[in-house]
Length: 241
Image 1 (tube, one colour):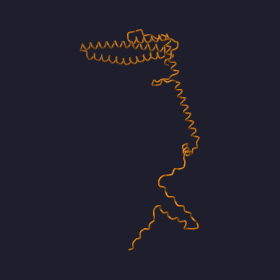
Image 2: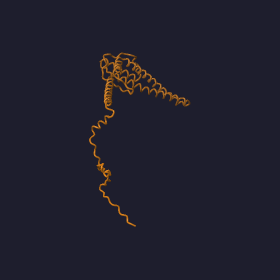
Image 3: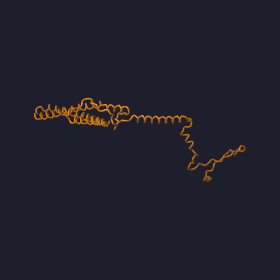
Image 4: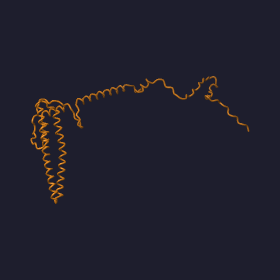
């Protein structure tokens, strides 16, 4: 919506314009509105100009909400002190003057609040603002955190997500077509496997092959294997007596 010139529709007078210049805020609101009218007459009014004006109104509203709590607290405090200092004339007089200043500030506060409400209603009723809001609702989405996202971007994200889901489904279908006795991982390992590696370290001696002759019973007896690297020694004879 930024930097888009509003179509030929000029700002229409809707609502009551702030005519009471008794506060600085009212004078500033009038000056800002006059600037919008000048740009509209030259057909240079931008949606960004309307957005800036609305941000100013919103910021001043937040300030005055805090200001209202402060004025209410000070007013209660002055009344409480006046009840406690009934016998002290000088302090009572000072508290009365302080209360009058708070009341004047409250009057200016009320004038500013009325001006802000009137300016907000006027802005929302203008044709450029309503056209901008229609375009915003058609093409943009605002999240709970306040972030603004284009609907076209959301649609592209959904299309990308659906394409990824389709690829995942195709992979799952191809995996289901394989035989259950041989999972894909086992098949790959079987293809890559070569001859078994030779084990390092000390090798076990191979057993000696014996050919048996059925006709010779003695051949069925297999002599014990002689350990490699060692000689058989005869045990020492036991001395007699």
